[in-house]
Image 1 (cartoon, helix red, strand yellow):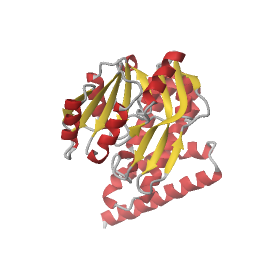
Image 2 (cartoon, rainbow, N blue to C red):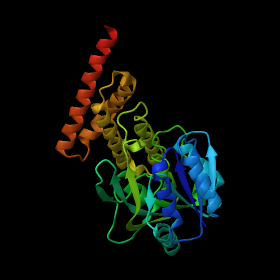
Image 3 (spheres, rainbow, N blue to C red):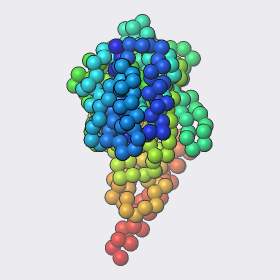
Image 4 (cartoon, one colour):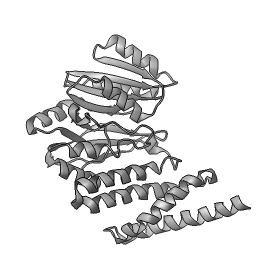
Length: 319
């Protein structure tokens, strides 16, 4: 059986589409765990309605603790041999779990993954990501390397299927803004085999209010902190991937630095100071790495702009 853990928080507009797409799976041996993370909109009664009418649905109502806490609550309640995650504002193709489950059984893999369709809510555009012409079988180490290089996959928890025992002593870090960034690679490293089925079977809804769609925030720097923790783990387990792990931190830093560059709010100065310190530490790696000259110039421009803006804000604070 597959336990599908659905994190739910104030997404009533999307919730029925999500749950209905899971109920429509061609793979029928599912339990669906709707983890309501203290929603204040219409999500709780919608979840309860599904539990009353659908025998495969169970609902967990809890105080708000964030996506990581919700995933962990689902893991504690799950009874399946396999674990899958779906965010409550996304939806999946009817054959997703049948395809992922079959790939694991056929290839003896502990993790399988698929490509995705990214829906930009603000303009309706759709983009396919991490899709392959044919299925690919990887070792756990190869899968980690691909993740670090943003090749064929990333750290998202929800377009994958995992053997339950991989989570024996692993849980998502509660309070971390990008909670799966540091966890997925650890799960892959425990897998002797990982299968990428190639097809785009997960539909990811990028909306302006989601964690991945907001501008610079006090906890945006958490992406770099999580990446640094993962780097320490990778460097210890796979010393020959040290260059890739450093590049991974740099990639996340570039995202944070871009958000900081676009920030015009002096109240967020402390978070921007942290971003600038990280940028200063990793800037030599970026300049020495296999980045294009255009990209290096872009990073330097953003870094200098952030430093100058912080100087102005410090002067204003003193005056």
